[in-house]
Image (cartoon, rainbow, N blue to C red):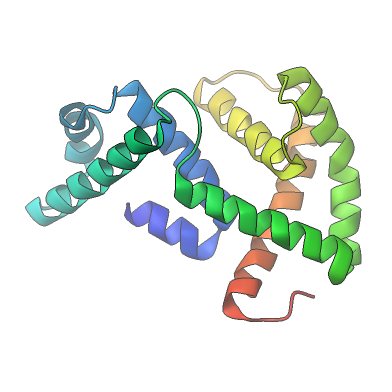
Length: 180
């Protein structure tokens, strides 16, 4: 919960990937708070207050996932909202602000995004969501200690750089700072 708040404040792209991982973790625990307490909260609990606050936070996430019917797939509403803001910012950087650096990063990443979309059968979801799915897959591959080819690593890097720039722009937007 503290990690999520820090990532949301400082790096929105990492926040989204963190929540993707959290959603999958809760699914793996079958939304059982006792399992979450034993496997996730207890190992990092520094105090009873931390334990109780963490328990409440995980219970809230579990409740939201169950209420939204995303037990098998899908994302929390808070992620959907942030994602909509990122799509709006993406369109603004390209069409309104005409940020040349962002346009170049997007054009470079676009072929890699299209290739990942096709190989992963992602259909017609937004390019940014494809990029997030790709980076989440990279995270899962790293956790499983699976090798990633240099060509695939290069594709991931193009998407990572695009999302990093977008993330910095997002935080500027939230602070009311100029985007360029």
